[in-house]
Structure formats: structure tokens, C-alpha cells
Amino acid sequence: MKQVVDIFRRETEVPLEIVIVVDNPNADVAHFSELAATDMRLKIHVNTSNLGLTKSLNVGLGIATGDVVVRNDDDDVPAPERLARIHAHFQATSADFVYSFAEGKSESNNSTWSIKGPIEGREIVAALRKRNFIVASTVAYRRTRVVEIGGYCEPFRYAQDYELYLRSARHGLTFSCIPEQLIQRRYSADSITVAKRKKQALFSFAARLMDISEAGTVSDAARAILKYSFILLTPNFLRRLRRSIGRGR
Image (cartoon, rainbow, N blue to C red):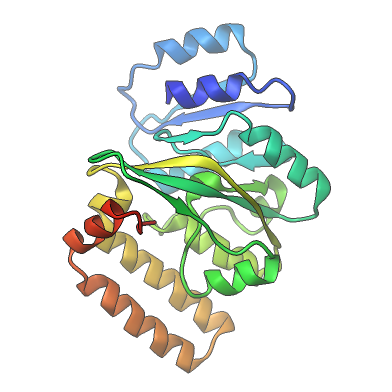
């Protein structure tokens, strides 16, 4: 997290507030408290109990005051120019959500790969209705638009970002892409994407079924059931193998 905050603090060309939500009441945040005493752009909130990721995201959303919220998990490293690119993109477009490409990196063997997706808004939404190809830490969105539709859905302990994208699309929010790698997504054995893959898949499946029930067809439901059955039956070692040869998300 220190590395992420240091990178953002060096971006002085865009208006900025950095909201740090720590979901551990026993965490040592002395370093960040010292920084906040001299850098008024920093806001630190330590949850009084462990709330989990989704509720913590809503806490951060409630603290933030900026027009645009830029998402960044503590173990994903932003490019030095990330905020400037996002600021320029929102200035140039009317999009509500903006994501970028990313670089995946395995901490077990240092292999890397590109994580990409569609660029045009309609193609992004169409692709999201098949799978979540967006790395959460690449996303930025207009704060008021997300608040208007209720923020993150707290029953979703996993796949909360995917549920938000699909619900946002149903409410008519628009999507865009910056086709550059502005995040390095690091995969370790302890990350949610790896360690909780099947729970993540089940919550993702729930988000898809909710979306299909509102905007899809019976055939869409049948395809989703087949797809997620395959995902759940795929052994974890095969997913690790895909990443080791540069084909993971």
C-alpha cells in the first residue's frame, strides 16, 4: 500500500484526494497518519471491526468527495501516469465508467501477460454480459452516478465489482476504455482471485443470473449455467498453469 500511495502522491498535475480504508482495527497506520499530517490530500479510515471488502468499498465511497473515484487495491501497482490518463479521458468523454488494460504478474515465477478487453462502450457491455474481463484496480467511475444506483451491493462478498458493472449497465451508465496498461495486477497464492476462486465464481454466477433475469433470455441462462459449471469443475492447478504460460486473467 505504501508503494501505491507514494505513486499517487507524485501525480501533482491533477486534483486529488487519496482515501485509504483499512479493514483491520489492529493495523499499524502510523506511517500514513504521519503523511496525512503534512499532505492534506490523504484521508485515512480504519474500520472499528473487520467489515469485508464490499462494505469497505462503500465506506470509501461515502468518504470520497471527488467527481471521479479511482479504484486501486493495495497490492496492484499503478503506472506513474495513471491518474493523468484517467483525468484526461473523463475530460474528453461523457463515460460513467472507464477501465484500462493491465499487466498480470505471477509472484510465484515472475511471468507476465497482457489483460485486455473491448474498447467501445457497447462492445464492453456486451462482453461483460458474458464474463468479467475487467481488473477491478483499472476502474474509475463518476461518483454521483454510482451513488445514485446504491453503490456496491453488500450481500456480494465476492464479485462485487462485476455485480456493480452489470447493474450499472442496466441503469444506462456508459462504459469506455483507455487501451493502455495502467496497472500491474499481481497474483499471489493468498489473493482472492486465486485462493477463493470457486466462491468468486459462485458470486459472479449470481450476478450474471440477476442480470439475465432483468435483461436476458432463457437461452442466456442456459449458456451461463453451462459456462459456470465448467469453471467450477476446472481444477485450480489448471488455472495456475494458464497463468504460468501467460494466459491468465
